[in-house]
Image 1: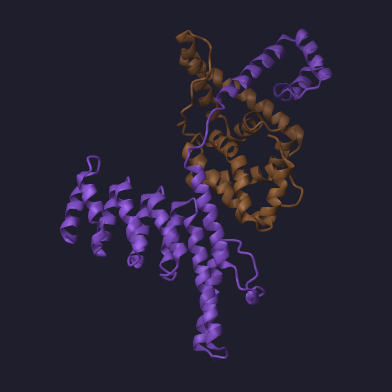
Image 2 (image 1 turned 30 degrees about the horizontal axis):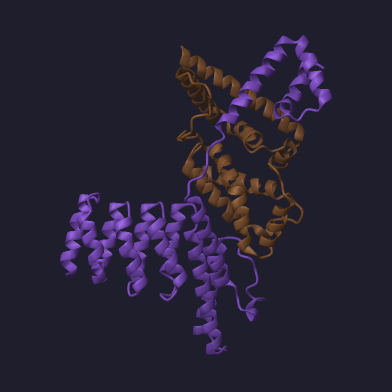
Length: 264
Length: 187
């Protein structure tokens, strides 16, 4: 065995993948070649040392984040699934969110065409197409809100303004963004977007709980503004808790006092 | 890394619309993927984001999974693309070395020996981080993910011989960087 052939065998040698005959041949070479032996020992030591670095585990947040994402994706697909009669027309696969939105725009064009055109189809067809547009908007919104990039998620919040106020899936996604999004700008945008849903007791209740748990003073101040704007008297308790909190930011506490004065 | 036939069957079900089965794939593979990304990026949060991205991509591109193809290899191809896109987006090329690595198990009672080992591991992490990403990746797959060379060849889409040469060059480069760092520290 030559020194070059030894180099070819090193990877298998390190991984313990050499057969007995090759291993023996390698050892015979090492017995005669100090340079190769020394290099093999050095590389083996480095290889073995790497084994000491294998301890890391992901945080506990990874699992719930995945399951929320999976559920949102499934709901998005179900919501976007066309009725059987329309399946042939809308049966393509969505390759991207941009494509989905393009499709939504196309359908919107069809809707407008129906509206302003010859009106050959009845009101039922029109309602069905409008419904389809809503489904598309919902899919785009939910999908964007799951994206890794904060700017994409901000776009998702922006799209949320285009869905119907009764859309509970988008509402849930926005509430989730307020409570869990790692990016403060996304959380702030989601709070703004939730103004449209302010009549919902679930929204008010969730945001009241969120107020105390938030780690960002900016988001807390936005939430207090939300509560005052929407005259949410149910928020008094949460504001009082915040006012008494020893850990809350001073500006937030002052804002809470102001909020209480507005609501009481 | 053991490739189970069950993974392939589960992925076929996912592809055919049974998205709930994604949970099984996630539970089996998310830790290994996390370690893969952590070794490539050196950043805990980034690695976790990439894990989420991989499973999202698997759902999104499930239709491209072909019957009978090894799931793990396919998943790591998805993972490589997620990593490359993620780095491009974040402009993060150099690992951030923010890991908290637990102290290695040792029966050695001598504090100076423990300290030396910890310092060596610190140097090793720095050396790994200083390695060019293509060399780091082949070491991560072979050493940390315990993959066979033919599986790595599948993922990197090259022949097995090329993988072995890359592993040799990578471990050699790592050793050199390690000893250069150790020399700097000693001087």
